[in-house]
Length: 109
Image (cartoon, rainbow, N blue to C red):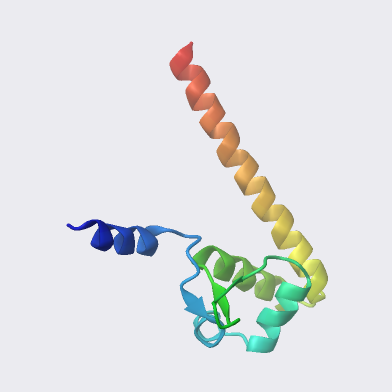
């Protein structure tokens, strides 16, 4: 496999690679582009911008937006839903870091 082909494969596996346009992202998670803009305005995440200024979303960002939609659909304001999702995401990252540190500690000791 060439380096270029490997780079393309790595992007498909990268959860944070901004592969989706706003229209495709909205379609994938069943929301409107306006909802994605409101999630961005609530600072849940900031999509990458293409050279032309178009928003691009990663799979990770789409999962966060989908979770925010679930919470908002239960009657929670979008800004509050985004704050909840952001905190859930931070907690998950902290747990993963803790597990990694624990593994390293177990291997060292």
